[in-house]
Image (cartoon, rainbow over all chains, first blue to last red; front, side, top):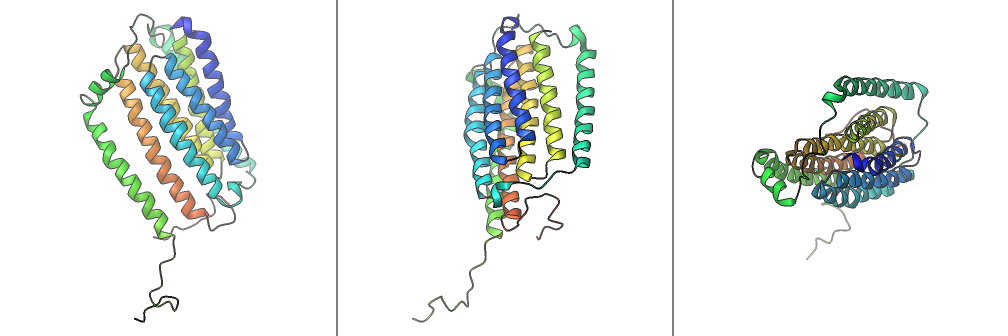
Length: 181
Length: 100
């Protein structure tokens, strides 16, 4: 995989810059566009790691469905979803917590060293293919895979229920309703 | 620096970025987008592990995480819309109570 270093680095830089755009963009519409670029860059990274089917799923589900859903919600929110000023205390807490997380992760990465993190990827044959993923999903991962079905069902019913609750109930005694035969 | 280290470092930075976004932003939609960043970071490591081990299980797990992200976005955005479409300010600190 080391011959893919430069393309991987380009994809990683695009994913990181657009991810930064998602976090710092003031207007949510800009953040959604940055999220679209980010998801496409991550899909490119998956392709370079020989995960064709995951890249396809990323483009279809993330870029196709989730980003469009975010766009709809941003369009429906009042004032385009623009938020108020962010206090310096909030920024400080976010930066400190994320910095600590990053330091911890990087320490783990460095401590892994060339022996721990330098997995001999290049020697492995390219894995992937829909058939192998299907065998895995219906084999060792059968229980979580089957649990995604009730998860999606609950998500659908929950979204509809949350939305319906906000609608005014029809007034049965309303004079506009024609009850006379 | 090998390609594997590059992908791992990218994933770590993405996770920290998403965490900072969740902590800093006041807009629920922006917070949800930052959560999507963190899920993407996790997925990157799963796919890298699948490649490194020569097994495909990590890719299947990444697909399950994709489905989870979709369900989470639907519910989160539904709550955000239900809470904020009648309010002036889109701010997660605003609603002190949620009516059942």
